Length: 196
Image (cartoon, rainbow, N blue to C red):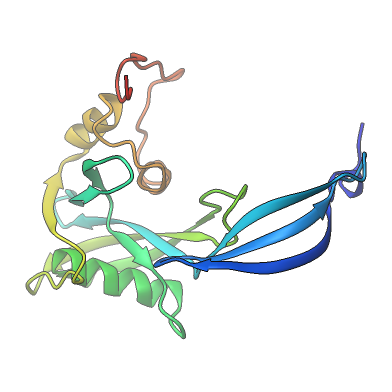
């Protein structure tokens, strides 16, 4: 069996790519640990992200629906966004919840972090749970956002996951740390979410 050291690729050089709105592009020339062949690999550099599960006092999940350009339709997901420079993930989660939904307050607990796509991303997405949030203000989404808030009870949330309405992987990751979402094994119709 290979050791971890035998899996590590050696970086020979790096150069910056074009500027993108949400990422800094970097290309690394990496040496294969076995063959010593050199491959150019894309890395999308970003600040950390946050994604949160916010529950009202009656236990409804505060969800957001917004248009997502990658898939070309509105998706239902948990609130979240990017950690601003100098901000910690809790402050970012609280800010994003208030901006996107108008909900604030509650008791906050850290649910850990995930790597959104370690094949090409260099950052983490931190998950938070806020219990007992209350709507205290109007939404203040960013200039590039149009968001509808939806409140879902646990049964409706579980149905939305199981029928494929909620497919956003970071939302599913955060929600699965709070709710038992899927029967085991989870089997879904392969036609759901197909681009064909």
